[in-house]
Amino acid sequence: MRDSSGWKQWVSRTEASPEYAAEQAKLDFAVALERRMQQLGVHRAELARRLGTSSAAVTMALRGDANLTLDRMARMTHALDATLHVQLAPREARVRSKAVKLSPPDRTVSPIRARR
Image (cartoon, rainbow, N blue to C red; front, side, top):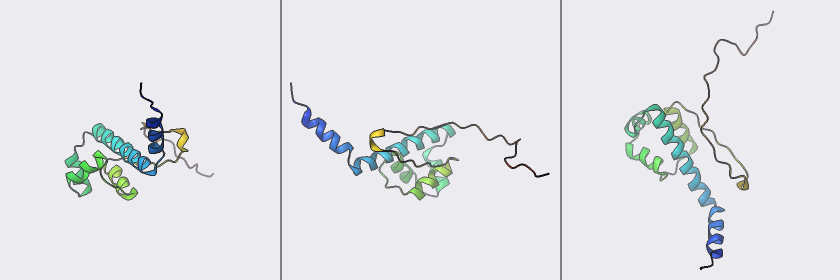
């Protein structure tokens, strides 16, 4: 049986690198973007049209190949009637964001009370 301690050390070093963190963030965004597109029935060409860009640019983002800025990510989510949330957590927490389905706000109750 082969000693796997060298492999485990390599994986640990890789997962601790900033490059790995960047790739993981791109992948998380791409997965969330794809989910939202599926929810809305929006195809890549339609998202590209909404953004005023090419389908190839959208495909690159969905593959995790694009080096997206926060501005570009926010524009993409906005085009899908969504918002972008960025969170920070300690590395050891291994926190992964989840899409949360929110109910529409109750429009019948005003958050501000009128003074008498």
